[in-house]
Amino acid sequence: MILKADPDKVLRFMVENFELMRTLYLAQLSGNVISREQFNAITRHTGEISINRLFEYKLLSWQYDDIRLNEPVRAFLAFLISEFKPLLPSELEKYRTSFSTLFNAIRECPEGEQPILLEQLEALYDEVQRFLENVENNTGQLLRETQQLKANKDKMEYGERIRRARHLIEFYIAPLNSILDLQHSESIASLLGELSAYANRERLSHSYQLARDRFGQLHELLRGGNDRILRQSRILSRELLPLIERLQTESEILSGWLFFLERPFRHEVPSFSTRSYRSFFGSSTGANLELFLEQFIQRAEEVLLQEEEITAVNRHEVLFDRREHVDALHRQLPIDNFFDWCRNRLYQDEQEHSTERFLKICSIVFEDSDHYEAEFTGRRIPIEVEDFIFLAPEVKVSLKPRNEKEHVS
Amino acid sequence: MYPEYHREITEALLMDARFLVEGEPAFTSLRDNLDFYQAFFEESFGLSLLCQSNYAFLQSARDNDTLSRDICIFLGVLCYEMDREGKNIMEELSFHTFAYEDVERLLELSSFREVLEATKSLRDGPSRRNFYHLLARRRLIDKIDDEVFRFTPGHRYFLEFARGVAQVRGGADEEE
Image 1 (cartoon, rainbow over the protein chains, first blue to last red):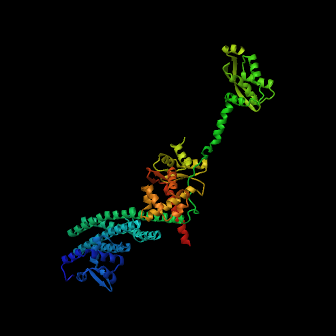
Image 2: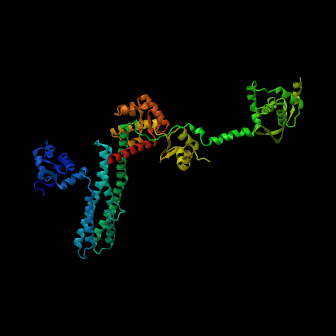
Image 3: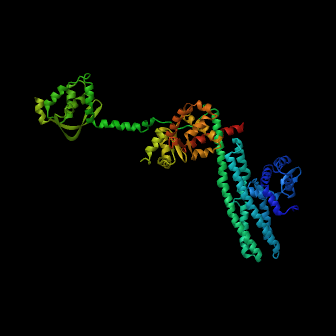
């Protein structure tokens, strides 16, 4: 009990010296206690009267040689400043024991002992309330710590950041997640579910009116608490865990690049794409080429027309008397089967029985196609020259009437 | 007979040797017919197709690819400098745009300047301009205009490489 001041005066003092209170709170948060030297440094510019009041108003107390904020003051400041040390999950585990003990006591409370039942119900209500607040504070604090770690304001080394991230996951986040796991039968969250179901039944069926009211209150709190726990659990699994995972990934990427940049020209590199100019020679090229060549074999007449150029180019090298064949042709016109006539010319008048020579003889009509008339019967005849068999069309050839005169003249 | 966008797929992957990325209709068609294309490129050209959730490309058989090395050096230095400036590298690379001017400033002042100068395509501003054009052709970056670009999902392939290096080296260090 504060003997030397009224409560409102103490609060006013706190308001007037709030920055000092905040500094003291943060000092205790980081060091657990405030050492004498720290205290002297913090209160260097504070008047002696105010320093004395800190102790007279029981805001601070000595603990051997160190100083601590009194617990209710610390909790109040923590609430105001919203800056906490995250609770170790084992600190939250104590609620399991108190919940079970109170739950058992309530269930086994003998008929007629209403006063103690009501007190137990109140105690359970307060305990659940404290648990939920602690969980929320804890999640909030863990979220802040993770974000700070991610932003890396303290310029920590990568290794240190990973170690810190792993520490948070291993000792705080993963255990907290299992405490809040509604699917797990051993979790505190599922114990609260059991409590809620019991309170729900009792608020309707208990024989004592006041107890029914208290069970009703407890049930309401637990119902809301279920939502709050779900929300926290969701923050943990959807935000914290991926955030830390990403932080770890990012640190790995950076460490990887640093390893690589230590010897960038000798380190192996990932295989990337190379522009390919081989694409025109794929596995289908052989088949395409074959198809391309086939057209020349099957369409002998088209080859004939193309031979003309070769004939022209090679005229001096090939001893081919075109005139003689043309004269022979004119003597024998009209001819019923031109290609057969060509074959006969080849075997009778030429010494060289080559395909090339054969094609040259055939060309005489096509070179001067203006002078001749050709009539295709639609039949084909095989003509064998060297190793080839030409499936030549049966063609009747005669002179065009109007050209006959010209030619003779 | 062939899946939709077959021509675009083969031209992009084989002739342009570029990334196909999420958002391109050809990428969707490729992913829908992944088995066919894996067999197609393997049997026709002996190339293996790497297709992740949001990018794909044909892996060459070459194990000493200059372009790949240049990209690693460029990304490595860029990531290091972004982290030094307190930026979140994965978020920056995935969701943000980059002004050439800012990137140039980072590279000019980088402590890895020596490495950059020893790399032909990264040694100075004009060389790097060409390098950016090349990255755009290979679809590692998308040019938004003359001043700004952004990375396509293809950059993740190289980040995964860096991660792999850290894991191998980290494991080796622990064994020591």
